Amino acid sequence: MDIVDLTPEHETLYHMCLEDWSDEIREAGDHKKVWCQKMKEKGLRVKLALDDDGQVGGMIQYLPIEHSFAEGRHLHYVACTWVHGHKQGRGNFQKRGMGKALLRAAEEDAEELGSKGMVAWGLWIPVWMKASWYRRQGYRKTDRDGIKVLLWKPFTEDAVAPKWIRGRKKPEPTPGKVTVTAFINGWCPAQNLVFERAKRAVASFDDRVILREVNTFDRQVLLEWGIADALFIDSKEVATGPPPTYDRIHKLIAKRLRKL
Image 1: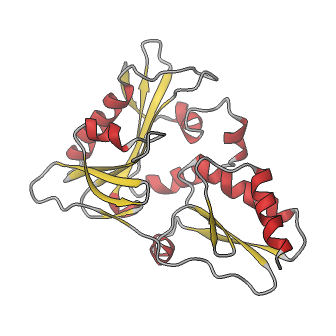
Image 2 (image 1 turned 90 degrees about the vertical axis):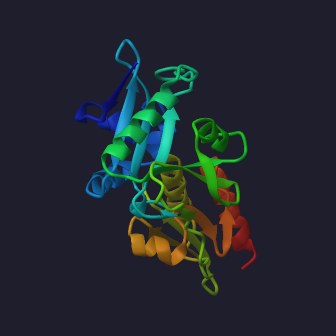
């Protein structure tokens, strides 16, 4: 395989997380594209894994931790390592070593840029973005917030371990209304999908249901809330992994509306 930097030829595919076959990804809008364009100025790096036929099978995106969802300095943060594993579209590229090769290339690049270590995140439960996979690549836990585990691999002895940015407040309800608060950062099409579905669901109700949009690409907004991507109905958070369907969001809003 070959590990290459992102080029204009593959940007659209990258914006869709290699799932250009997916109607759901299209439903997520262009938030990832906008995020990528802005984040390039802040040091976003993207590498792709190509098989022997030149087909893109995996990707990794990483950036200075100062622009991530964790607190730290002089480190790089892996926002996502993804090797396409669906039967649809380009097919299953997993179990070929692409993920390991992508991570190694990103680490080498970050070290050359003067970074003191690489930070990644994963889930302690055995689903997507498994923390256990990063442990097998030499990473160790430095913090945990619910099911999210923050891991790191220091490159230098003076590197300081990072910490999660934790939630600092929740949205307040509006008297006499159902308030749907949708937080969006733009980095993840799955979370962008939740945002778009919430917008459509709110628009289907009368003026007793209102939408509050919170764009957390702004670092100060992110730090104010301690939230990157989330969906709240009044002050109750809706689970967004995996993304709830439009019908699910609509039913939750309708249920809350009946209680007004």
